[in-house]
Image (cartoon, rainbow, N blue to C red; front, side, top):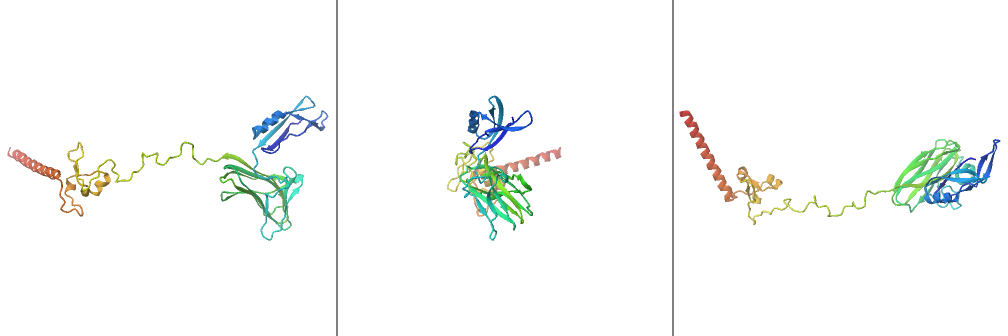
Length: 339
């Protein structure tokens, strides 16, 4: 007995063949009735997409197996044109082009079932077939179709998808009767739930062929980059937040109405002056201190300004110290020369 292979789409009616091929000891072949494990089949359908092996019994005690592959749900409506209602499909021609694509019932020209979209023209083939699908969950999708045919000179054939304002194409072609080509577009991101799928077929006069089995299916979730619990709350992170002000947080602002006060420091030479006498360089550094050179520097618009008494007393003390140092040095040199 020959095992069987069955492929189906999730959501479609799934069944296994009633008979299997058997080979007799004289080399001849025939068909024999088979009873499949219905519980295993039901469980496979309930589990969804995947590959399953279902056992069957022939002639009461002989075992045969069916390898069942359930593919993801196809979101294309009437994907192989089997249903009589084909209003979801649109056949599009340029102005002046005579329609030359029809829905044909001929199993030998179809990839599956009995129907396919057949095309032929003695003047030249040039058309599109497309469908718009809505209500899809945001995520990534794959799209494919099958096409076969021949006598296609100067062809322009491709599968396409229009989504989010963009158009994606997968080039294809034909090279003989029932030599099926299977172009595919992968990882199409759909955000607003809407996509237009279709095929473009163009070739010189005499081209012929069929299109069948469009397949649009979900392959991955869309992650917008926001993880639960990690969204930033406005005002929550204040460590580096800039607070309006002059940038010297924690310091009392010095104004003409608020006299300068000395800030405790280990450096006795630090002098605090009113803000209107602080140089630009000091202001950028956030300190309101100066040295003797700063004291003697006239600031524009501040001519005649007087320093606080502390600055004047220190200056006088330094001046006296320098004079005494000079006198001491002179006396020391004088004594060395006398000796």
